[in-house]
Length: 68
Image (cartoon, rainbow, N blue to C red; front, side):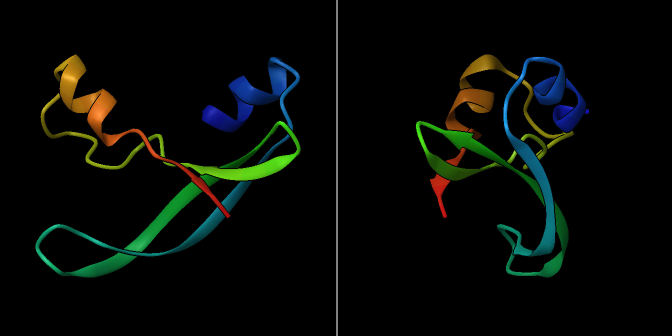
């Protein structure tokens, strides 16, 4: 869904898959979107902790825009 929205907004966006470690230390499959912002590709994780605390402060604290 993020990829579709980004494409419709004219953003350069890609889908990527890999493994991620949860807060309890377990590893599992996960996916990210890569978005080109000011010439740099950045990983955007729109689903990390989905289904947990959905308060605005929790969502904002979990947003990740990591340079890759």
